[in-house]
Length: 166
Image 1: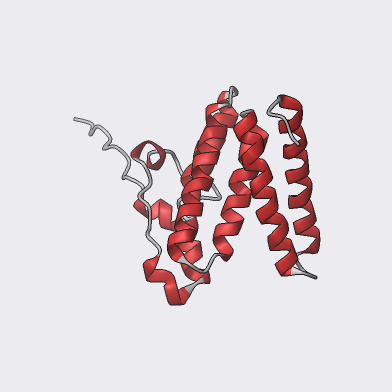
Image 2: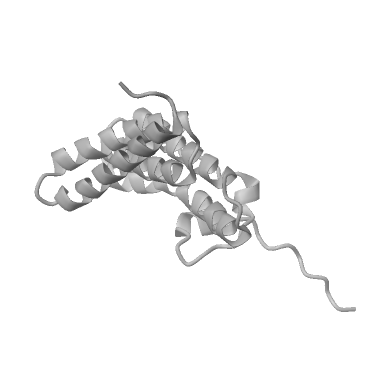
């Protein structure tokens, strides 16, 4: 029986992290088992983050949630999972103190909006039922990075007009 204290949150985070690592090691031999590890990790990481907010835990929860969403066949369930993943990553961002890391994380959050397009590519028969979420203006205004998906670069607002010399 787990208590709701920091020690138990740490245990759940560590256990969830280990399950994610195990899923990576086993995915080629046992894809179904690896997916089960990711789902279990997601549950543990969610419980851990409910006990104590932890940036590492929330980031892993976001990754696990997105991984589950990518293999989910139902577009509405997948979409809900993608929203949960972005919410967990947003919570992780809120805990960041370093300005450079914060800027990188905000660009990563912006880039997460392209996951809906990736889901569509992997599920062509249900692609049109997966909504494409609009990137919030404050994230869309960020400069593209090397990893920014092309779908998001095209939807970025144009640069502000430059003053013309007289």
